[in-house]
Every structure is written in C-alpha cells, then in structure tokens.
Amino acid sequence: MQADYPPALYEVTVRREYMPALERAQVSGDDEPFIRVTAAAAEVMLDRWWLLIQQGHQG
Image (tube, rainbow, N blue to C red):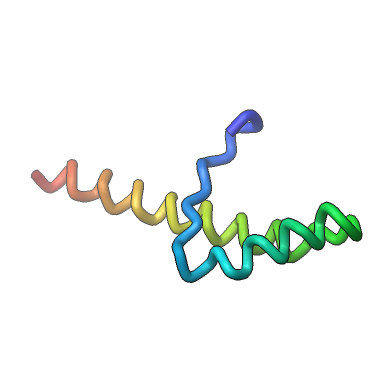
C-alpha cells in the first residue's frame, strides 16, 4: 500500500502457495512465485471493490 498498490486478499486456498513462495523469496531471492501469488491476491481484492462500486451505482 505504500507504493499505491491495493491490499492483497489471500484466500484460504491460496495460502498453501503463499508460504512456500514467501520462503523461497527470502531464502533464494527468487521472488517470482511470491509476486505471482501476491498479484493474484491483489486482483481478487480489486474485483471485489469493482463489484461494490458497480452495485453502488445501481442502487
């Protein structure tokens, strides 16, 4: 959020990918899996915000 990125919402089903990706980034410096998981989680949040905005304009 510091760099104006949206918050990421990690669904329960994604958390089993998140922890190994985070560990890999910390241990080996390979942050691609972590970035991929985090980008997908941020997209989930953006989709939810967009849905709320659309519902607000309809009601």
